[in-house]
Amino acid sequence: MLSTLEILLPVFALIFAGFFCRRRNLLGPAAASELNRFVVWLALPALLFDTMAHSTWRQLDQPAFIATFSIACAGVFVVVLIARLASGRNLADASVDAIAASYPNTGYIGFPLGLLAFGKASLTPTTIATILVACVLFALAIVLIEAGLQTERTPHKLGAKVLWRLMKNPLIASPIMGVLFASAGVSLPQSAGSFLKLLSGAASPCALVSLGLFLAERRPAAEGSSGSVTSLVLTAIKLIAQPALAWWIAARVFSLPAHVVDMAVLLAALPTGTGPYMLAEFYGREARITSQTILLSTLGSLVSLSLLLFYLRAPG
Image 1 (cartoon, rainbow, N blue to C red):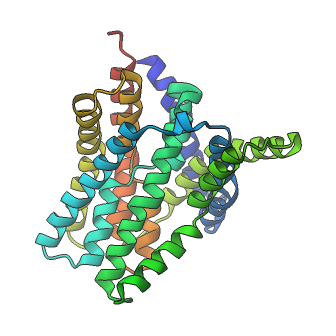
Image 2 (image 1 turned 30 degrees about the vertical axis):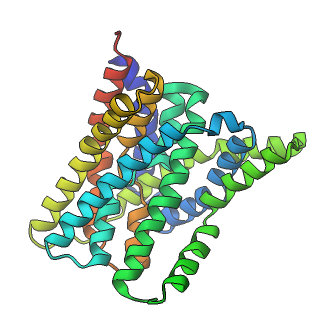
């Protein structure tokens, strides 16, 4: 158990550092968004590009892992979407709730936790998972929200709008550029490699501090108990149902090697990332359930991830 805590404590200590600095007003109200911009536009793209530029097609060719993670995310998304639509939510709000229950925080927590738990072997699977989350799952949510709001009725125009949004996303463009660079067989100059290493080294700590700053922001409490109950349900789905589904697919359907199963389950068990909240804010949807789910799942993951890592690292 002590070795498990040694893995988790640095991760949550960085989150707490950001939380503490914001609550003590050591960092201002714009700190979360500005540090988040640094991570999204510089540090994490550098890490993704560098990882993919030094990956081989053999490393990236993991169809069973891709299918496992995709089905685990999509399955939870679809089930929650249908349940929320049946409860009377409109398509746009139901889509925001669905992505809140199925959007693992692979970028902010996945990379540092994977490195501590599995070493550099975790970088490629985590990068693949990040692309699936940031590209496929995000695109699906955007399409459904746009359709629900009916801001663009023409299918080909809606598709073009979504494609353009994705192309402008640095978390999608950078790994694609890295793959193209690796395919060209060109080696990076030493100075460029050092630049990427220095910049990518800041990705994990800054991302975790930024998450702490975000969680420390005081937001209006939801009226009544329905919002809190919904957030608790979405949190339970995210921390329990999604990793359980990932384990079943990886171990029972595809019979993947044990270490790949462990990485797939750990990535699926990550708490909800900030992406759903950003979507809710961008489209002007009700964001209280989403922000509560992010907070509850992040706090709850301290226990759930501790238990999961203890189980994964237990002898036999």
